[in-house]
Image 1 (cartoon, one colour):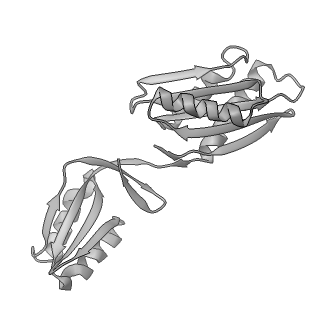
Image 2: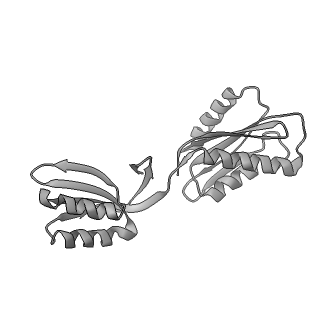
Image 3: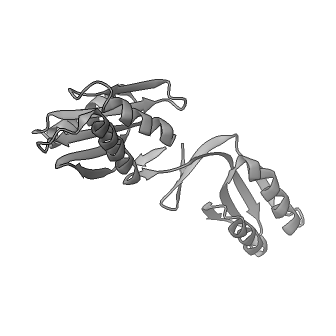
Length: 210
């Protein structure tokens, strides 16, 4: 998923190609994003774009915006599709440098600008998993935290009452393994509750439930 949009620029034979990216949830979101980019680069003739909506790319759109057919929008769209990023948009604005690039040159430039735009963005992997809430006596807390740390499973919350409750976000294929280790380490004294299947992402060391 595209968590945070970015901006990047390349120069090809004096033409500047400026790529802006953004996460979007609808075609209306994209229209607002495109308008924002057009206002920012008000003196640019070409604002070529592509966007993909839906986890399975149910909706895809692209535009050459006056460039020769197939030299801009489609290459940008291919970059998006090949990246695996969904619900995202890329707009590449071109300042003409006075030198014709030809169709091949345009395809390469728009593709490279789109790639640089994505590289400047914050992209997070979406993980299918479950939330585990582990309740135990304070004396067992250290063991559970050690097991989770060794497995590189993020601890998302801790609450303290007469017992301690630790919350973890666990990938689906590791749930049973982690539960088994925690049960063994605490001699089955820890109470483990798991949620229904959900999707989450790790961004800037934070867990986002989607």
